[in-house]
Image 1: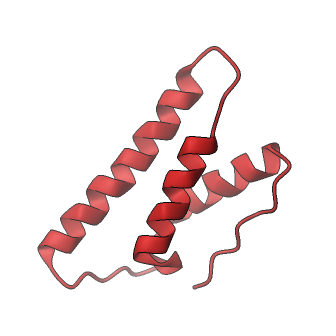
Image 2: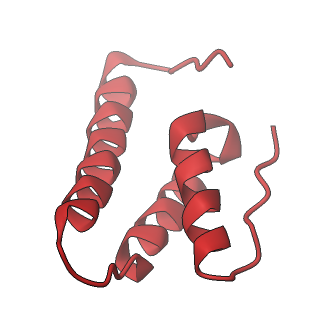
Length: 80
């Protein structure tokens, strides 16, 4: 997957958001209690809506589908 950006600023914003999403799930997974992924899933869906399916990194797509599968939810299908 090749991702192109219209400017350095748009790239910087995208990187910050991707890192925020990854940090958020890491914090959830580090807890020694029942995991609540609802807020994280919402942030991924919001990110997807703002940048489009093709701009969501594969590791985040896979993590979302894994959580959805574990929660018994319908899997999100990403369009290319």
